[in-house]
Image 1 (cartoon, rainbow, N blue to C red):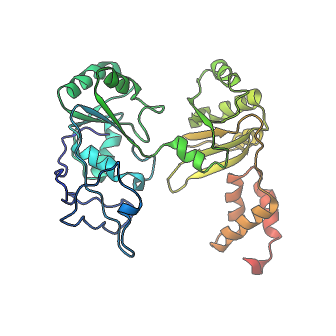
Image 2: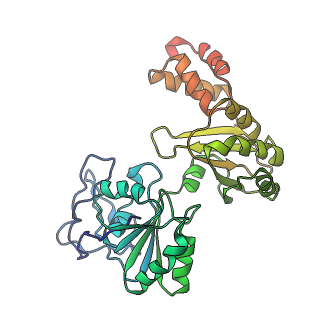
Image 3: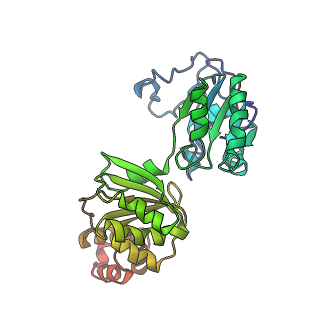
Amino acid sequence: MEPGQADGPASEAGKPLNPPLNPPLDPGNASDPDPGDTAIDPHQVSQNSIAPEPGSLPRVPSPQPVTPSTLYVVSTPIGNLGDMTFRAVDVLRQVDVIAAEDTRCTGRLLHYFQITTPQLSYHHHNRSQRLQPLVQRLQAGQSIALVSDAGSPGISDPGVELVQACIAAGLGVVPIPGSSAVITGLMGSGLPLDRFTFEGFLPSQPSARRSALEQLQGEMRTVVFYESPHRLRAMLTDLEAVLGGDRPLVLARELTKRYEEFWRGTVAEAVVTYGQRQPQGEYTVMVGGAGVQAVQPTEESLKGELMALMAQGLSRSQASRQLARLTPFTRQHIYQLALTLPQDSL
């Protein structure tokens, strides 16, 4: 996360956070720990041991002091600030400096959570120059937090080389878990999750992209990719040519944000749909493994979705348009289904 000199809380057990940390999306304030509380050992905490009393707000755990000569690899929200963890905020407040992929982006996050720790940039273009100075800081006893623009550092983002250098130098490396577009997308995909593989971004060159996909033709696990909007159509075309048009496919965008969207269908249907629609935003692309059949919505399930949307005040036309964006069916087909719904059922 961002660089900065921690002005954070003293690490004495039993003292409340200063300033108090409130869940970003909850207007209510979390109650402070009682004066007699002791710090919570994160390795011994169970759900029962920190369960709030009925009718009360949960208490914020007392912060744990950071360890000198340690790199903290800190996950940050991928869109919704409510996904920031108490532990991540504590660490970012206490470390000596934050190595950030983009200091402007991270600066906004730090400002929101009242974190004043200094930042320095660490990204793809300067990592070779930054690597040794950061390791030397750690060897001198400083603690450093590594953050990316969003999500978990090192996963299709800078960070792996720094972690490797720290391990090689015998320095501590502590991951602070949190949001990841890979896991978030899979959770809402409906695809098999007992086994999956993450491929990141495919090569931008067409021949190299198809070659990479050819190596996945027999893959039985769910496969996850990242893709940018300006390359999505080309990627879908190559998926159809190499893996086949009948593979189940889920496209997720704007994850955790207000306009979060999951599109579900087959590869062939996605080629048609996104040939007519302009891709927007970064995509998490999930493809069912070889032999997995796509789950298609039935007309009855579509009618149920239409009724739910119209009960919220949408017209037949508006509800049909919204469902058409999320399914392989055309707006006209869904609208015809909407016309069959009796008015008294809405």
